[in-house]
Image (tube, rainbow, N blue to C red; front, side, top):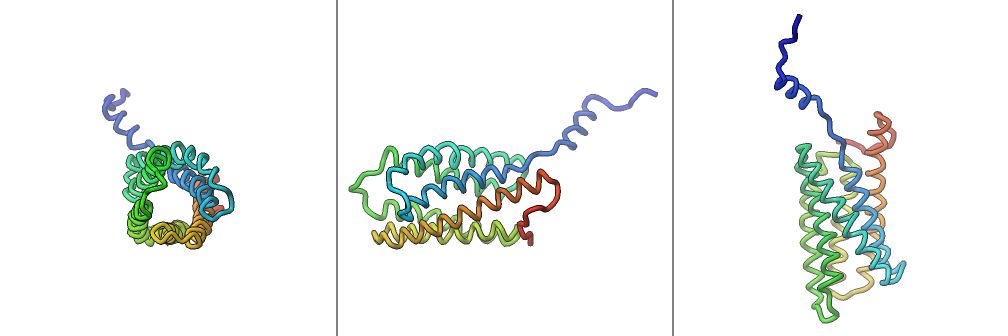
Length: 200
């Protein structure tokens, strides 16, 4: 018996059957790696010369990598993923552009302070959404909000001690993001929960 399916109906069925990989681990890993290196600088563990390495990471892994992850989240219909990854991809690209081309010793403290404060605000309202997602992301976003706030206060006040504390919290944030990235990609690969993300 001849099939009654038309080419159009076969195409529609194929489109329905398509599945998309989760770009979250890519975005989280890019964020974590770049945050970790910059946080080592902010914490005073390594010298300022390492910033050149941060700029390279910020351009391609933390910046471009997260923008790509955000656009892929758009294709999956994930509003939170689009907003978060494109926001932090934009943050790293803006940071690299400022550090490379615009920063001057004469810049007032409010230049960096306001820059960081704006991302603290965005991170704070994104944190509310993580309360419907999972515990691993909630930890990342709470810590990231604290990191931005501490670094912003340190920049406004010129207090190196507060900036160092922000750097330490940033390192912890990066570790939490690395774990979340590893958990999502590991669980997807093994097709079962191997590393818990504590869903709500």
